[in-house]
Image (tube, rainbow, N blue to C red; front, side):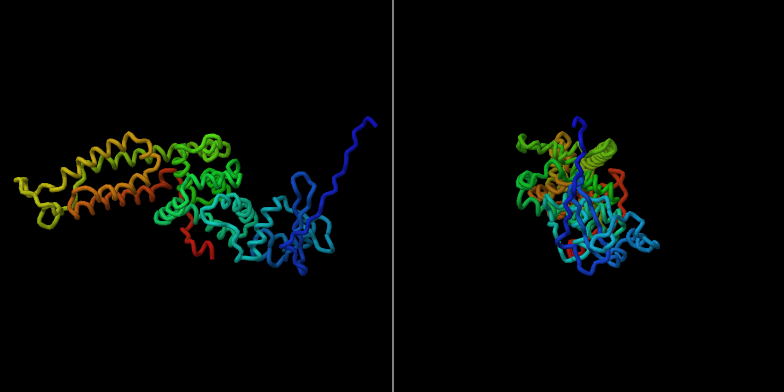
Amino acid sequence: MDQDLEVEVIPNVIKDSDIWFPDGNIILQTTSQCGDEIHLFRCHKSVLSKHSAVFAEIFEVENFVCVGRSEEYEGIPVITIPDASADVDALLNMLYDPLKLPYKKHHPETIHAIQGPLKLATKYKMNLLRRRFINMLQVDWPSELSKYDQRRADMNKSSWHQYVSLLVAHRLLSEHSPPARVICLAKDCDVKSVLPLAYYELGTAYNPIDLDPEYGVFDRLIAKDVLTAEDWAVLLRGRDFIQHRLSKFIKGVLSAQPPLRSDGRFNCRRIFNRGEDIEAWGCGQIARDWWFDHSYEALIDVSTFRDPLAFLKSLPEQIARLELCPSCKAWMQNLMLLERQNVWNSLGEFYGIGCDEEPTSFVTAYA
């Protein structure tokens, strides 16, 4: 026959090995994109209703069988949902087994694995599960500076290059790109608390350093394909605000002086016997000379503005090596650390993001 015949595809029906309870009274059905597989999850209406406002509303409707329902399977009502089987599987496993923890801290697969379940928890209004997924996300993308420093320390134990090698080994570079993927997920699921740090780290990724070009790591870490024009506008806004803030601080330190004591003298313990004014700052010349040289280098070094948190963190250690009195050393070190904290606290403002979620802890996220 010249006319092409359409061949009907008979899908393969798969019962989920974990979410198939003999006493379950509802079946959730997902279908693969090409239609060759049907995945079934036999669960309980009471459990779904308790955790999901959407399913609770469906099951409360009289004769809910007409709402998105297909044929029964083994006498059990079936609801077809247009979601990926792997995402539904991960969501239901977390729902039925809260102690199961499939995600690890600072691991390349975490954001990739959490993306689908978090979107479903948001879609079906599973608020408790959504909160837990967000907590897991916040462990890797914290809103507190001390936790960010700990995160960097943990990652530095294996080094950035080894982290990139993990991405390559897991073949996630084309699909997984912290922080660009985090930005997309946070916007989709309205998780504002992780956005300031995600945009900040996206900005630090502009230096390809000496990563092996054959992997195309730089472009993939930036993930230009997943970022919108709005994302780039936010990134540029933040970069400009950070540059302005840091430039102002660097110039301001040149005229900064330690606090005065009750007798009107500077709180400086340096003993000088060269006939200076008793109101002079004894350590002033050393401090200003060092900062003048250092500030000039900082202003012409692009890495200063790309990663000001790292720049400001490095200064107290350098100040400790200067020939300053203990009081002046402590004052200058605190000056740098205070500015670093202020920069961190202002990241949301720099990028024009308001954060509503409460900061979480590792214990609450992974308990």
